[in-house]
Structures are given as C-alpha cells and as structure tokens.
Amino acid sequence: MRRQDFAYELPPELIAQVPLAERSASRMLVLDPATHAATDRSVRDLPSYLEAGDLLVFNDTRVVAARLFGTKPSGGRVEILLERALGENTALAQLSASKAIREGLTVATPGGPVRVLGRDGELWRIGLPQPALEFFERWGEVPLPPYIRRSALAADRERYQSMFARDPGAVAAPTASLHFDAALMAMLAQRGVERALVTLHVGAGTFQPVRVEDLAAHRMHAEWVSVSAATCEAIRRTQAAGHRVVAVGTTVVRALESAAQASATLTPGTLAAWCGDTRLFITPGFRFQVSDMLLTNFHLPESTLLMLVCAFAGRSEVLAGYAHAVRERYRFFSYGDAMLLTRKAA
Image 1 (cartoon, rainbow, N blue to C red):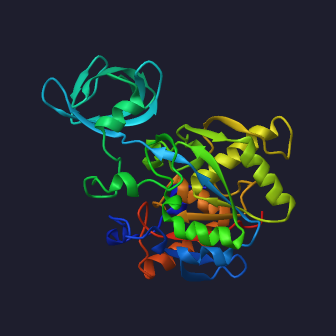
Image 2 (tube, rainbow, N blue to C red):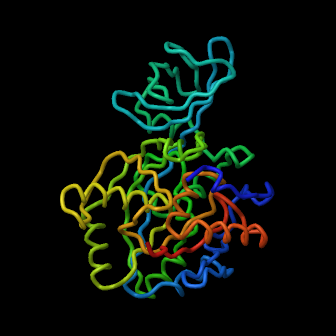
C-alpha cells in the first residue's frame, strides 16, 4: 500500500488544543462491526459495549517533562526533546536549532550544560549534569505534540498523563487512556470488566511523518516494551473463557502484538512475558493475534497510527468513520475524542 491511501481532509479548527474539563466526557464514535454504521456516543457509554469478563489493557507509561530549551555559545536557541534515557547521565534526544548541530557543542540550559556527544541515526547522544529522567523532570516541560499550537501549561503536567501512569519514560501520552477517570473505572468494575497493564514508552518518533510513498520502505522508530507474565495470564484466562481483549490505544496493540511475535519464535500460538525494543509496523494485511476491540483517538492523516487502525478495522470502514467524525465536528488528536472499533475478520 501507499502513503496517500491513508490521506483525509481535516479542518484545522477540529484539532483539540485543550482537554475537556472531565476526562470521560469526550465523545466516542462507535463503528458497528457488522453494518459499519457509525454511532455517536460518549466515552461514559463504554461499559454498555462491554461484558463481564472482558479485559481492558492499558499502557502504564508515564510521560516525562521531556522538552527543554537552551542556548548555544553564540546565543542561538536550541530545543532538546528527550527520546530515551541511557546510563551514566546520557540520553538520546532530538535537537532542533536554526543552524546545524555539531558534535562537541555545549548547550547552556537552566539545569546546567548539556553536551552533544555524537549522532545515533536521526538522534543525538547527549551528556547531562545528572541522570536523564531526574534532569528533565526538574528542568523540562510537558512535550505537547506539535499540532497543539500553544505553550505547555502547569495543568498539562496532570492532564497529559493517564490515571494509570507509573513507569516514566514516554515523551508522548498514550492518549486513549486519557479518557478514563475514577468514575468510569468504577462503572466498568461494577459491570465485571477486568483490567491489565503493559508498558510501551512512546517515543518522539510517533509524530514523525512517513516520508516514503511505498510503505514497504518505511522503517519504524524503536520503542521499549514490557509485557508481564501477569498480563499474559490475564489474557489467556479471558480468551479461554470466550471473552474479549480490549486494547486501550494503539500502543497497547503494538505492545501485545510485539510480544506475540516474540513468543511465536519459541512456541507458536502462545503469548509469553517479553520486554525489549519494538519496531513493529502494522499495516493492512497484518494478522492480529491478541486484541479483539480497540479504543483509540483520531490520528493524523498518513500516519503509522492511522495505518494500524485501518489494519485493525478495515481501511474503507475507518476512513468512512473519519469522514463522519469530520462532518459531526468531533475533536481530533491527543486531547480529542475517541472511537471504539472491533477487529475485522481476516
């Protein structure tokens, strides 16, 4: 398939710039798996689409205050966006400046000097005054996505973080989880819906555009994943009882399918605990092994996330749903609304 197969028109005013006051007040577009008809609901209605014994799987990654600004010795401004913490006070980061960055550069920041140690693919290795996560949490700001055209506010530190966030390492939120609050979780628990956790540290590469027309030539950025034995056992019980595994967000789908592929190299048809980097790129034709349903936000045109959603529920069906969402003035992207999908039969 080609990149242009996943294009759609989006009026800029539909890109959500701020979150709603209540997390679960967001709208939820539901695509009927049989008729493909679109129904306009609320995230608060999610429990009515689930049954006792269904399993919701959340990503428990925690967003780091990963954006930091500094200056070159010449006075030029440099933006530092943390990608991944390394050992010995080093990290991988994206660096942006009006003029080219070079190895050996020292960038002055409010927390002390940051040294540019060298290239690592499209990223830079940098040296920091203290361990990366500690340094950025102290001196950085919330790395709001580039389509949010405002500076980060103090409120974003809490609002751009899910209620499940516990393992720091992401530079972007697993946005489908942002719709959940204590009241909604209580309703789900009362209905008998179970929950489990995975970790996928979302990298800044999630916002990078696909630059090639032929999708077979695209290489995904690496993101760190951990799927525990407890979560694998919860999924096994759910499937054995004939209930559904519901992925909350595309990051959960990628984490589970990455673990399934790794497990298959050992014992086909099993899901075992796994951790490591994933570069899994899911496009139409992919054979899903774990998730039965997907709650997800709306994604950028021609993005790898939209391609994953189209692979899950059908390209024509999903793009028709997006056209409906545009007509009905849904709110798009990270602070926007959601859609609930059922996996299309292979």
